[in-house]
Length: 434
Image 1: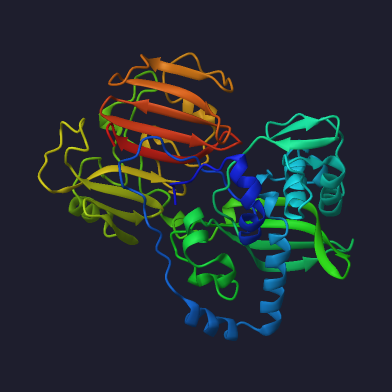
Image 2: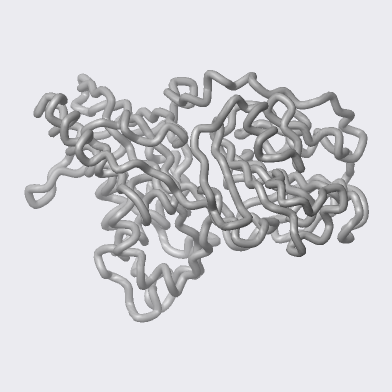
């Protein structure tokens, strides 16, 4: 789920209608790791639940199933809300995010010209419909270039990486005629959508969704509107309820604590301890013994294995001539842990870092002075930026316009990927050569 594909704008313009129409709301950007062992792409494993799903749909009352299905597709019509932050009122949504939403809806309608440009008037058709807002010309945004001659916007590119389908949990009508609803949100990865069962197949019974998919909740208020006999939603507010998440991983939030550290010292090899004692380089059998089993296991290739446990992906490899800097590991045919990664683990990573931490909190856990955020810069936080040297640096990546922090001991690597809110989105631990 962590291995994503970079989508350039040329591909987006040809596939956007198909791709976006097939996935549900609120897609999370997830950059592809730069340090990854050869031939390690993890196959997704989602059980075939067609028969069970049909049985559970029969058990669910026809009225509730109809309502759940209706709201699933109404929210799916707003799939580009994935770019939005929580907003208490629609006027709080940044104009650049509304522009992106309106452009993508116009693209679905086929209103772009040969260059991919969409007129602002067509963008406003959708921002006014769904958010009761219209945008002005010449908006400053990193997604588009404004063409004054045509009063239109030409895209510069972005990523698509999965979906967050919303399933109705409960609903209430407000005195002013608006509706407030709570939705269960499951964070499907790109491969889960393209290669296996689609989110639509779980509308009748979300309990059949694989347990490793993170589960949280969202609350939204909106008006139900009608246009040419079709119902749509005009959004008033939206927020994610992380504290109400029914995440099977959450009960194990304190299962792993980081070892003591000094924020004024470089990251050390001794700090690479994870999940009650797991260390990089351990054998497949030893890791499973420490973890007490696994949630899923995969034979990726003849010399590659992986498991998923508590939202973490563990990658094991037989050491051979592919790995040149694993001097502390023997070439003995044993499967060794060379990397692990997660977007949803609720415990602590080295230096007490957790998913959702702010970029400021992360940087404060390390020495160095050059910590002022500068987009497009390559900032050395400490050490010499040379291969084989203990070092840490901060990058602003072009492909998803998010920061990435990397610290290495010269034998092991810690990578922190941030989202557009500058919060930790995923964490990776690697052996230096993996």
